[in-house]
Image 1 (tube, helix red, strand yellow):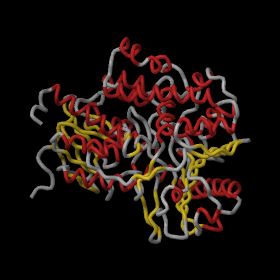
Image 2 (cartoon, one colour):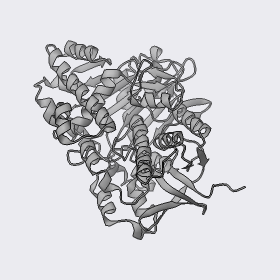
Image 3 (cartoon, rainbow, N blue to C red):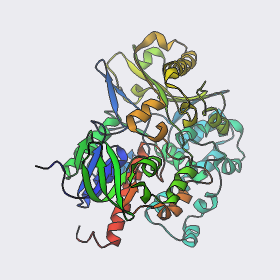
Image 4 (cartoon, helix red, strand yellow):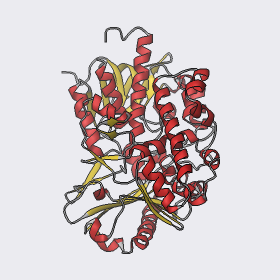
Length: 512
């Protein structure tokens, strides 16, 4: 019996959230789908690992676009519609901001959030509500336009706020509200989730982020992020998707400008009409297309013209007491010496010290996250890829441990006890860890930076022009919706829709 079929409608390279989302959507339409995953498990960074019998979350802080059971948002609804049953737990707060002169815990819900900002910075309630209402209006427009594109005159009539703010940075729009600096500081911590300072970050991106997280709150799976990928893979196989692990795709085969299939590292040539790649376009267009002569010059110009965003450095610990016993009160803490986001972004280009960090205690959302009498505590910073590219092999251990010690010392001082005295297990994840495990280009987990010159609105308009090879689609953080596990699902769905639309245009999806 042959290992692979003679032909598939679609081959998906990568069994992480984006690839699995594509596979589910395509399988629902009756297509034959093969997923090839280089690891022995699905999920990419949506995974967990075990140390001395303790399962530990590898990456997820919180999921956006889930929503409550009676008011699902788009990602939560997709899981429900696909029959992927996730036990979602709501995160108890938006975040705790630890900034100069401010120690404030803010909770989701526009009204609640605005009242709490006003309590910390009196007299700001109405203006903060105006900011949040504008964000929500833009959020609704983006969600509608992603499904029902329309002409510019139509957009102006139906989505005035979206059109009027689309060409402005977050800094420019927020300045029009004339809020005190401390109030602006409290509206800023989530900037790190999109990885651009406010002078470069399009307001559209900020608005979607704030409306989603602040308006509806965030969620985590009860059984860690691996619950998502494992259940997605199981459901996909139930729907007829073939998933093969430890199968590294070496080449994407192209003839006369069109995909014909792939070749694995072990030499299997597998034929298909479409390929969806989770590998970055940087890697695909410079190494994976065979023959390379099929790569148009414009494809190389595109990847060279885009700036890679952020990678990750995390210290993940299991501590020997509960969060309550240690005095850890907040699920999520954003801590920095300044909330000048442009300055923060600039400081992330090196190897430290890192002064803008995020901390998560999973037990405060999921009491079952660790064995009784213990808790998990992670400290994360999101450096730019530039600095870590310069680290030599002989310096790696020293640089890694110096950076980890700085983060541990910083948070020990903040918490009022020495974290080193309470560590049962510790794992240090670096950009090299990410690059090795996920094969992400330069360890970049955030895709291409959203800037005023290159962001979601512009990318939507140029998407068709960037289809350089017929039948090749991309799904992952490097695509239109950007980084994060929620957007990964959206990017996967978009890639699948592109395939289905192409098949319909060719008259090949009739009767499916």
